[in-house]
Image (cartoon, rainbow, N blue to C red; front, side, top):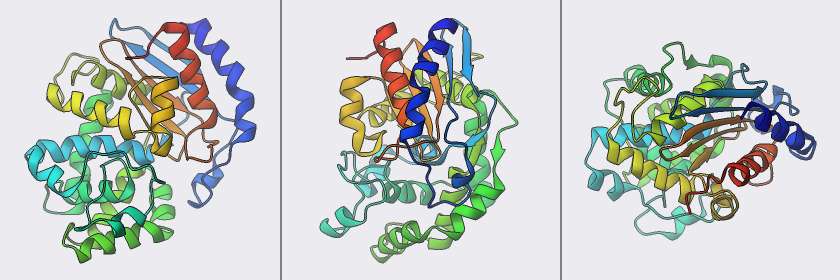
Length: 303
């Protein structure tokens, strides 16, 4: 596995030159576009890394998986999906168009920004800090790393430039889909700024692969929720490239505009990828190809 990861990483690293950083968030524009890293943690306990794996990055939209799990632990499934749908969007992750077309306004799924804002507003807690701590606690337990925290610089950078997300939040507020706009936006941006590395991400993927059990065997989340969120990862996890990714790679995955990709092969392994150079859909351009190659070499597709 070590030789395979190193070979695939070096094969696909040149693709980073064809991607672009997410420069609309100033702090993400500081990333090195040539960076590429991957970690694999198997259900048998094997851990393999290649590339710049120790480097930390913010999870951005990958956090939508975590907040969906927590919201479903706080509320009945029916209550959550009364406010946010289960269907692929087919539009950019930050689009407002479909919201305007639906009556009443209801985000199509929890993996787009509008849906994630609704989900964030449903997390139980007496303050933003309390709700954020619950999100962090879940990430830490899934990754078995109590040191995971927030990158304050990225949080401030993203909050300052969150014009589209603020617009989405106020649109949703008009229809009473969310509560306090500024509190919801602060929580959303903060959980997007959770910082970890590829190994942490692979361990989160392993927790989902083991239906809620982390690397130490602790049942962190209910088994049925692990199954449910992996389904969303397949249908909606790679923005509006999810269908192509399912066909070419066939692994439940969730990406973020920092260049991270969380992947989970049921009962087999968790995978964490980091490559900040993005394609035109907002996914790591080299990371997607690396996962495609790995899936083919190891026959990992769930289909």
